[in-house]
Length: 493
Image 1 (cartoon, rainbow, N blue to C red):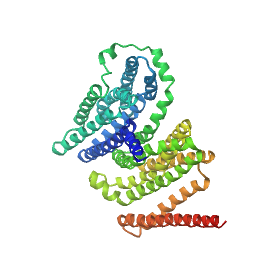
Image 2: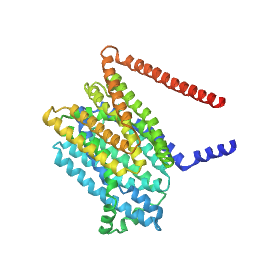
Image 3: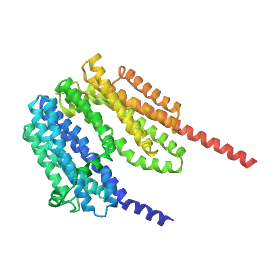
Image 4: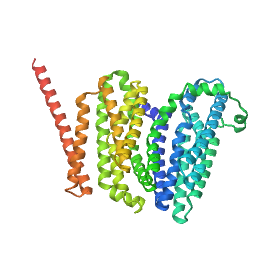
């Protein structure tokens, strides 16, 4: 029996699914650390104006690249699995992505010239926007690796690129480089990554000469895009959600506000890495539980919900207590107001983890179209709240931060209503979440006026841990006593 169990575990550890998952998690963490260091160095070494303009150019690029791949990756993987001639399909996909990359690069440059008057933003957009073409080519190779379960190659190359960016960041400490030249160096690094993808990451299936001379009709391109447009919407909404904030701030507020927003978001994005990584393990468990019964999935969801909700509150109170010290230490003294705005943005961290969990539950129940609608409604509300705030209240970064928070809360509420109607959760559970979160936040605010916030964080959560642990053991002990009494009565009978 033990040998069978050992063999089973060994087999799972050697499986491509497990290997790719481990590589993905480790690579993701390492990349985020290295790229975050790169971001911090850029913020410290350049003036607020240069850094703000660099952020704007990157935001335009990120906004455009969300659409440029046309969401065709999943179509490609599905077709590649059944294609008789895989090379022909790869050439078609490559050519579509190449055409799309060129078109959206032009769109990126046009947007820069139409929206902004700054010569630096325009020049940076011309350089940084080239990544749209490179990204589309790399996108093809990434999904070839997905189809072949060879994601490890993608993770390795992206990690190498992150290391190279880290090296560039180290050079900035020794020798100052104008922001334009920095962007040029980053393009050269991207070319190195592209070559690694083509030579190492594509199993030699990519041959540029064959692709250049391959043909695909306009009719076929329209048909492929037309039947898969929904994937483009799903894939782009989450990116647009955050990028639209930067664009609004850059047009209505100052470059300093752009820097404050992006630094806050960088810390926020580091904060939500953990729930996303955990979700890669939770999602398959939700699927397996749902196959057995909806009740079992609901139980798993409620157990996971506690952990996600706890993490959201923990992350918010951590930033509330320590951001005044962390941000100057990381980014220098050029951004004295960033900590204030970072605290506002991290209010969204309270509902964010559970929003992500509930989205996984909806997808598990095959309600992905409803999830897409929730995302779209949240995006519209975000923009609407920003417009109303700027027009009727004040032109401040706080408007954007609170618009994000309220739109995410609305997103959570819509999910709550759906899950109540589907019998996955109850009204009491939903109300309990909002009441507890509000009580914790306001009580923490009250205590922060009375005590040192750094010490408060540790003491507050230590007390919460003791109370929660006591309740947990009391509940288990009570259950054991009741079970023993029933067993005794059963034996007497």
